[in-house]
Image (cartoon, rainbow, N blue to C red; front, side, top):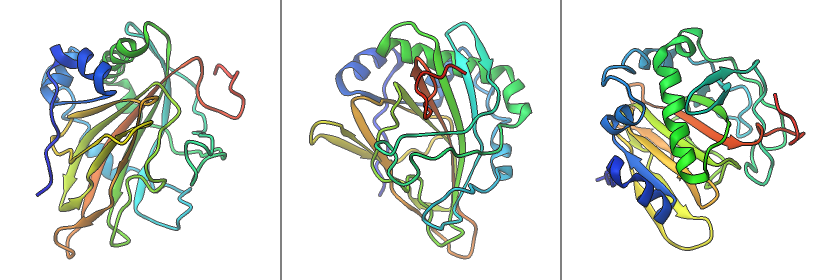
Length: 250
């Protein structure tokens, strides 16, 4: 049986992040953190089946679909920036690092939803818990990992850091899936935890400097039926977006 994640209450979130460098909050806590009604995100899941294929998978797979968008965020404001490539250095992504990867932009209906701004602003507050007030350079990645190839790999690059200040993984949906276990380990030590995110809009929060993370491959429970794991990954970084020119301030 797959282990459920240990949940952190909002009142305990600063202490948990300080002590461990990671936390999982349930959907109700996410809504409270972002000052949203408990139904605010329910219109989003139908957008995931429409995600286009990832054209950059270097392992030859066809199991990943995604979009990408970038924002400058504080706890009081959200500004969308012109569409840009996603870039990571090879030291953080040995499989896909060092290249500019262009993906289709986020759906306009998603970006225009008032809940989108509330989500980004509320999670900016978590980044501030870790690193103090700042303007955050946020990249948003809706992913669908499916079993088109018989197996889907949520993290084909393996256990990794992302080179940012805060990583947020929201589970949106799991359907007919086994596997997909999340693993979080100390970046400079042997300690780690393993669990499986199930509840829609529960969120894994990671202090990227302190922990590495990965998610194990997924397979279908019933091989005759489609299977998928939908997530929204948000990364928060101070100073600039990652790019070949680190001085760039798009």
